[in-house]
Image (cartoon, rainbow, N blue to C red; front, side, top):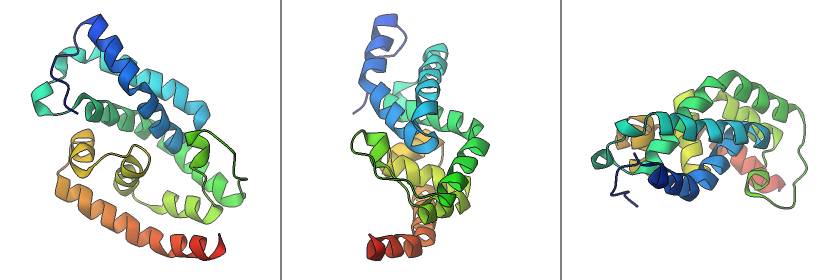
Length: 171
């Protein structure tokens, strides 16, 4: 949904925060874990608030803009993210009962496969899988073309297919 009004006023920004915080938090939790998600999601809105005058509603949805900021902040935590996936690859994680970030449970093999994707492939895949964004929204969030989104997603899926097939037969 396209935000029609600028996000410059404090009341308007509070509305944007209230509408999008949970989705940003879920996305970041899926990328970095629940512990880091609170800080990175909050930092996403701090950065967005500081840059609110630069948001151009004619260029797209405020949600995609926020996911772009969040993805950039996740990039700062890439080394930590890679360590997180390598650690998951060494252990079997029990399936928790509730909470979206807890439903995104990865086996060791899947975590290892995710850590081997390029950062661009991983960003696209996880924006689609965790943030439920479409190609156009992912393109806007990352500042790339929808065609690039499609090709990165196709490469990521091909690389993950053997792991997912194993998971399906083992699960």
